[in-house]
Image (tube, rainbow, N blue to C red; front, side, top):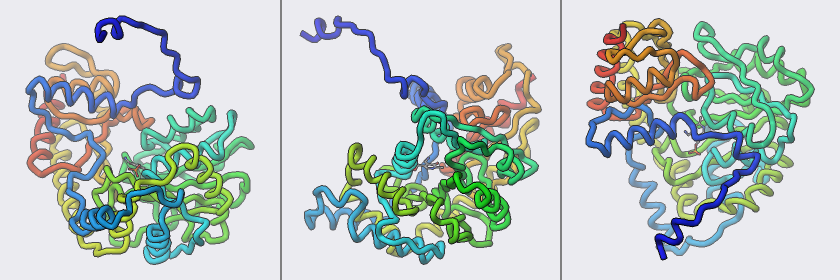
Length: 410
Ligand code: PMP
């Protein structure tokens, strides 16, 4: 029977929406790394975008309590009253923003909220302005909606931050959203009050443009000055700002799949309509855990941050010893975005010429045993991303391999 079933072939035709999207470079890198590990190669993993810490014990306990208490059924679509008030308190305590109950939605990860917000608002022909380098999923989600990702390059000399003049020039009657992520995956750029104020002035002048902000790495910043988010700076523009956040990175909870967002009630209602026909409510148990994360002791967040800071310093020191590489020190996140332009066009010891990010990352993986992600995956050629969400030993090994690999390029 098995053989007969396998023999049946059919032509698979993906939908138009999906045909615009290929597997991401991170997915390809993950698969290639896994394959080499399966063959017994020891690879230093520096491509992954998730904390390597365990979820704090008080959060795990809250999930266990929820299961034992029988909180194992559907909940309200946009989250239990408990998680919604925990999110409301978080926004007011940490960001100084007040959201009513109908302005908050909790869902299965921040990515689902981004997806739903775009699904709920974009039509073919609409444009979304995305500064590059950007997190890989943004442009793909926009393109899946039949809309256009208008990618605006940013520059190392501006700290990889969008400049107000460039935004002004890019706005057209079709612009629907500006999307910014701060601190940024992959560049680590952190928008400060003055950066946002200039951008918000542009947004104010164009009432048809809404502002989506991804604050996912809020708690991983290395500056002493407080984190700022646009809705807190301009309450008068809150009617067109969507603030997206989640527990994945701050609390080492990527697998629990809880994200949350605050924004204008009509938008949140539309997002709920999308969720009601897709994921339904987020996992009831994970919601209880996330409420504990937001409300409970925050010492693990501080511990992780101290650890990321030490790793960032290690990676930056190591990078300064890598001939041909340079990187701006990240103000936040656990990524460094490394400029390798000085090595462009060189050859590997096997005689292969390195002419794009994929060539370099393939060489680093296959020949040097360290996994990284090509900059082009984030819309910026001439760079690669390393993640320092791994142990000190693995980072030292990975950085030594990068240093030797780059030195061997002639
Ligand atoms: N935004 C950014 C910038 C991210 O890097 C990620 C995860 N890599 C997400 C959103 C998605 O977060 P979640 O796990 O909540 O879907």
